[in-house]
Image (cartoon, helix red, strand yellow):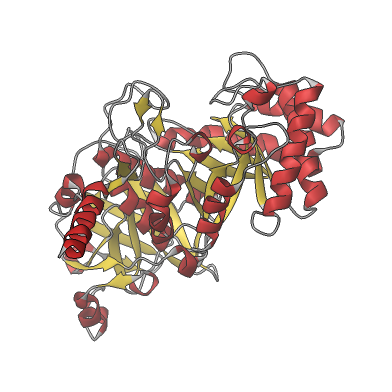
Length: 490
């Protein structure tokens, strides 16, 4: 009897220690609003291992400063479907005593991601107080030779430990964040770090910069130094962090950065390496002092991914969870967490990214920006979609002229897209993953021009796609596929 009581008490204690499981009110409410079309299914979601698409990445940052607990959110990363994840190496956490490295915490993240089919890419950033170097966001880049040599020893140790497990290495995080120009210091750090990694792994991919936004001045000064020293070949990507309240406002800056980088070496590609959106009004960090919500966050994330897809660049969303900073619990997470760093629920932004990753998988490519007309005063962004053989399979569109809002309603727009002829189209809401039928009053095609009357448009991506190109789940799908497809269009 005593043994039974002890086990029951232990079970009760474990239950009390576990995080409370909550459902999301915002996600439930999103399911109740409709664009006025018949729902015929939902987007079927696959895991990271199944999709194997490194185009999409999620941020698993801040483990180096212990602002999050990897074990608490580990299974949610693979469920999200991303092919890659950004982690930070954490010199200060790895080398608390000079010359002695502790990598067990980093092993947990690297191996935990790889075990789910996710490629971790590692950001080598921040100093170490043991050597008198700052370890926080925006920390000054160290320039004294003694600290640089200690850094190189550390980088070499990390590269050796994870050779074969990590193939992509980013050098520093937002070196242009401080007021003083650190371009010369960063160029020296970039060269020495990249060379240390390549000595260990000659095939390593080097991601340079990790820019705060897209500053062409700072970037050009660093690239000038690399070119003068014959070191441009050391970098494969230039990464940047486009935090804009309206994600579409970042496009001109990204295009300018791309033009600049190509003028130095067209081989070097761009990588949107960190960008996200709060889910509440924040008083610190990026996009502060705007009244965000879980609705606008979900729309923002979907639009950031849509823009990066249209630009043909890799994309990473910050962050998988809320990070517990020393002064606040940040609200950027796709997963809401509590003060114990436990996952409470999936935010709508988690589902939005999951749907985008599954809809825009490795077999779908951007196909330019087709000409279109629409009877609305608002600006619409529209992107063509094609399959792996460059055959058009649809378009993706959204209102792009304003910051994503909380409104849960669609405008009915007459939309005509040139050069588009779909045999059996459906309409997909990327945020909720719902798939809608397009009966005769809503859609028609005439040669290479498709017109939709009463087409639902709002400030988040909608996808008009061939039914066969959409990953479906739902009983209505099988019924539709059984024999009514040809009655959809005229």
